[in-house]
Image 1: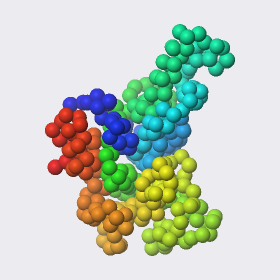
Image 2 (image 1 turned 90 degrees about the vertical axis):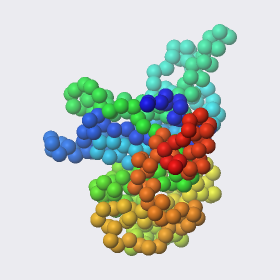
Image 3 (image 1 turned 180 degrees about the vertical axis):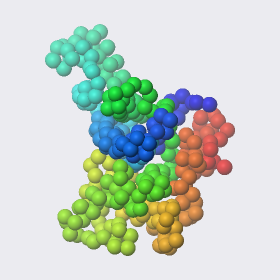
Image 4 (image 1 turned 135 degrees about the vertical axis):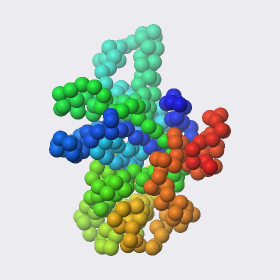
Length: 338
């Protein structure tokens, strides 16, 4: 049974969410269409550019993404408190970057002094905009509508581009966030569309890795591990990260993803060698230290990375986290709890 979106997005439980949208009829409308011979990779560029623009306006950060041929994945963090702290002028400035305004707000911007009645109405408008600027549904609506309109304009047609409303999974704990991000970043590897992380086009892992390598090359402060093609653990985290993605930082960067970038790159590289259909015969047996630190068994981790979308429904987390969320929402259980 379809549930109301406000029952699935619970910011009091977690600010992190895994979002998925799929093209209508699962057609290859964003990649290589084998039937027509046309290539629509530029639409995947549209998606990456648009989601980054929206994240610069909304109080919603991108932690991971993968744009596939007929669907896309996003892992985002909603920064509700940041939006609540914005001044009214900041809310208006952001809203006007994407949407038409309001005549009363226009009068306020022009410097007109509003009487009490108009000021109350003005405050209601800004409060509504503020709420929408940290609302995942408004973020996804803008993203999907923009892509659909551009694609239909290009194809000189009308009709649905997306098969339905987006799917969401609330990520209830840190280890689940980590496994979901790896699941998203490894989509091209699992689908046999890429052999390495650097070849995984239109993914956040490719963007992070190439940015890191460019920093390493420019700074000459570290070298790459030729066997795994990832930065070595001794490389420091003071190298900058992509500005449009939520940074890794562990305890070093306030408000960051609670793991180090190098640990994550090592973990995803190691996981990719296990899940790649052609590389299962020669895999490094060293266990990434983040799995040791989190006390996660290799088999459990790999099962999550391979089957994440099927293992959980709208809420994802440990059995304890899922049980707590089920009790909070007055339901018996959530998929993945047992």
